[in-house]
Image 1 (spheres, rainbow, N blue to C red):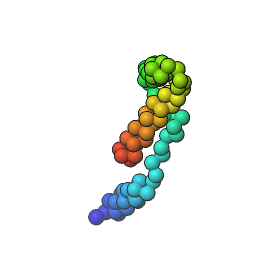
Image 2: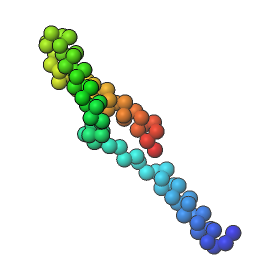
Image 3: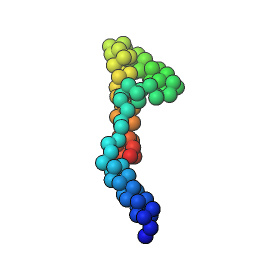
Image 4: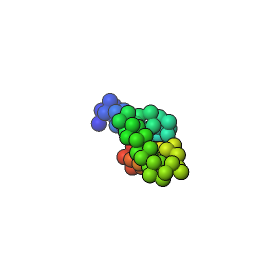
Length: 85
């Protein structure tokens, strides 16, 4: 093996070791929510109002919106945890 090949092999192994140790940079909840498509935000707002109306207004739409956002965030985090690397 030539010196250049040995050096390339060493560098590849060093890079692999570094990448194996590197932690995934996970976006914050705020960043994930900012990435949410506008149509999804609109649909969540509409669904929250419908749910609130179904309770006769006893539960404010904001509570339902928080629940929907939380579910969306948990889903996004699960995807990143499984396939993010």
